Image (cartoon, one colour):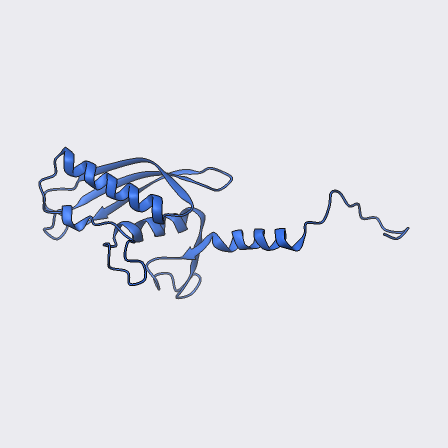
Amino acid sequence: MGANSTTNYYGSVPPPVVKYYVQDKLKASRGLTFPIGASRDQGGFLSASTGHKKVTNALHQLLQTERGERVMLPKFGCNLQKYMFQPLDADIFRAIKKEILYSCQNYLQGASVIKLKVLKGNDIGKWGESSLHILLTLQMHEDDQTVFSEEVIIQ
């Protein structure tokens, strides 16, 4: 530091390893916006999302994918289609909740499930199909600890 310098230095400069770690954490918090190509106007065909939007997109993708459907991740997803035409009693609702919680704990990054509610849709859904309404309350893992609710409809 020269005699004419007006810059004050406090603390120490972090080593390069810490800088790369912070940059990797920032890069890890980005994900693709789903469905792919839906927002060509904003961000292009493969636009990225962060934070709340990223978790919401990942949640919809996770719950609407059947296990074994993804080639490189055979355990990714939930087997919710098998419950669509079964009589929905307390045991079935518990099995559905267990399936969703297992998948969220293993594959949903960036948020934790605080509350989970599974409701039977109308007897006849939009196209004459039965449906499940899944209501989740999630808490982000980020510094602000944001809590938000999301609804996913399985048809």
